Image (cartoon, rainbow, N blue to C red; front, side):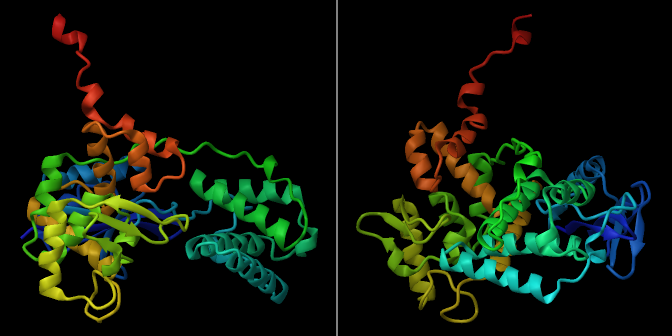
Amino acid sequence: MITTIEIWHSLYEDKRRLFLKFPYNQNLIEKVKTLPGAKWSSGNKAWHVLYTSEMAQRIRQLFMSSGVTVNYLNENEPLPFVQKTQSLKPHEALGNLNAEAQEKIRTLKRWMLQRRYSESTIETYCDAIKTFLRFFADKEISEITNEDLVHFNNDYILANGYSSSFQNQVVNALKLFYKTVENKQLETEIIHRPKREKVLPNVLSKEEVKMILEAHGNIKHKAMLSLIYSCGLRCGELLALKPEHIDAQRKLIIIKNGKGRKDRIVPLSEKILTMLREYWKAYQPKTYLFEGQIASEPYDVRSLQNVLKQSLAKAGILKPVTLHWLRHSYATHLLEAGTNLRYIQEILGHSSSKTTEIYTHVSSVGIQKVISPFDSL
């Protein structure tokens, strides 16, 4: 049986730590003990080490050859806070929101709801404003100035090691808040907008995708993973599908209210259509195409993630694959098969062609034609 090691980063005793949790295994424990400064936390029931990017990579390499599955729970979340200077305010030490601040945040939320912002955007913006106003809890909102923006950026966002994407989110939230609620123009431009990291999408080979999709004998699990890859769906789009969204005659799937509140259609292969018919006969879902243990309720996202983990374990794939890797792989494989980039953009639901063009950087078709001068030596 393949062991799964869960890894996450968190703040522990005012320091960023990487936690490692796994079922009792003496061999794995001995490996962990080789990591510098490794300690056991009885409260978390996990081992932990000081967080550095080098340590994270070392841990991956350490367990990659041990026949275990490494599951990084919050890899894409901002790094935890750590106190570095006297002026730094850790999240727990921020002030409390007074009644005025709470009402203004509710006003912003109502404004965004009326304009049909997505739930995730509303939550992100409101959380950013809460943190900002808690940072200046000892000041009246009307007294906050442009200089305070610089202070917040330097002594909170940067000092706490937040990512550039989080910094941009905060700036956007503040611009909207002061424009719509305070009717005041703060010069957010004085905060330097960092460039987004140019991270390439993770892509699997066709052989790896086949191993993952064929690992499950359960037709429901196989159909869910296969549909994500075969149609390039986002996880949320798959779970929101209803039987009426499948157009078997035209061999299309209608994606309703996808990212950016946009509808779109994606092609449905004959092979996946046959699989869906087999699944339908076995499960007869009532409301959603894929339902959990409770009828008429959509399948749980965490359960779907566990389905993928089980596939990876059965297939013996040690890469930290996520459901979104299947979408990235679909787009890249389409490109390598000669599909026009414009069609790929439409299928994936990208607003900008620049978003789709990133797959040209991971496609192996052109790169493999380049002959190394080493071969001619």
